[in-house]
Length: 134
Image 1 (cartoon, one colour):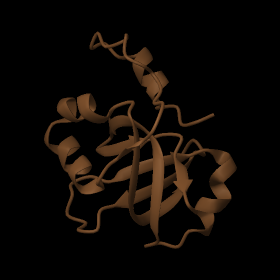
Image 2 (spheres, rainbow, N blue to C red):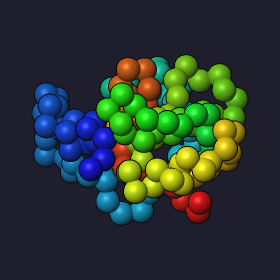
Image 3 (spheres, rainbow, N blue to C red):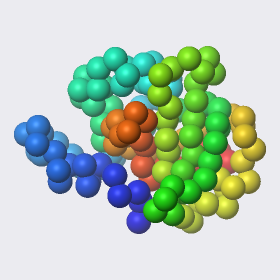
Image 4 (cartoon, rainbow, N blue to C red):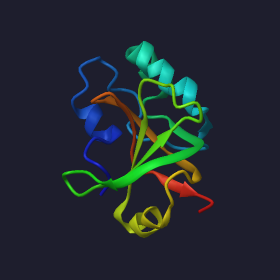
């Protein structure tokens, strides 16, 4: 099971009246540059949610760190090449891919694909991430 903060869970607690929107991302992922995505969330979370939340994205950047959160979920943190954005992208990886994540070196250039859950604790969260081409 993917991270508890997935789009499905977020939609269950969504009070914005957008419950009629799809709860899972389907189809081809939208190619996204991580820098503008992070800056948009930092500048205006609501506008960024309209553009990205529950949309399937694909992006490539540098692996800054990896590990497990306090609940034991595997995560990977991506930072933009400039490193000047006020937030980072946190990808939660299904347990079956934990070994792939563990084998990545810090600073490795990787591509991920997954649905955006939104901003949580000053980080942009992507759940059920897949490592593309790894």
